Image (cartoon, rainbow, N blue to C red; front, side, top):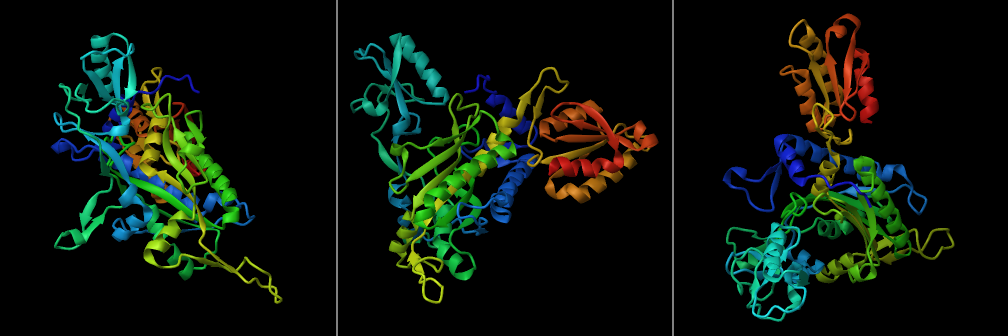
Length: 515
């Protein structure tokens, strides 16, 4: 475990606002909890991360590495709708089982996950007729309620609210002032409801999807019937999902609207565990490759009691965020889901979800095979795009008081929203004209990868500082020497060092560094 002091989440959030990475949704109206907007740099960073995933999963799967069957990995894309037929969510179990037990506070109108509410009680176990103090972990209520409890009891300990006998007449809710305001727990479905059609009656009820996976499962048969894919193969998609989280928190980590990057990889049961290990290990390597390598990133195999009833194995790629330290938060889950999802959709829809595998079964006299029909098993690597962006921002945030600009974002060049900055040292003596010509050349070649900055205002030091905070890896400055010997200053964001290269070599330099 790292001994590093956790970075300041407040400082990271402040920089994200100041430099246009992330804004509070509807901020001019006071915001809305659990929703966030991406500013210019954040939108491009998010696109770059999504594009990197798409390139490495769909266009060139797994960097060209062969799978456990000795063949290249095959993955095709789909783009399914946010609103699916309501029976989709009955089949998947979301209508009946996507519920969390909640308690409401009559005093504050707050709502809390029943199984997450903790209570500070006296360590001695003796509290007489004094109240006890409930709180939610990782929120301001924890410190506030601990302080009140210690003032009341002295030494305290924490227990689950569910361990106390009901009614909770003497429990003070996490944000309440008086005891006895918490209701009994009730189930709360996390799916957002909507209506399809103008009448908006109960028969028109639908849901915003809580995950992108079910759209893939519902279209899997169409994909293998209408294309030339053969099992084993994957279907991938990115897109928005919605969960009506009761306690969204920790910046963009737990939001009500979020984006996923998911793969459903279909294979024969006999090969499923080998494919599970393959995807688990490669997905961990992929996160390392985009700048998260280090002791903040771990791969955690689930214990048997954590597994879903249909799963034989699950692992999580986890990152140590400042708000989770010394613990970790999930970035991606890699799950062996068996054939549960396809079997459920087969049961509820009445449509057979069997795949006819002509490469299996008994060998016939003519050398071909009889074939085998089966419902494929599935490996699901499911990643959070917004969580990925947040991890990249947290990992990139660096503070170095010895530098003229003490804060900078060490974003991997592949993901950096601004790829390069072209600056004239001063706005005279022909420098802007030379800089503009170089800028046009670099935009032509690298503009598809991200922004190319051009600015002739302020001192060069302030321009460098702004680019450091924006995560721009390289700045190229046209100065007096450029006019005499055709060289420019190239400044590195990570080290602050400055070197000179020929102006004709700038494009080649960037091509090598950006990959």
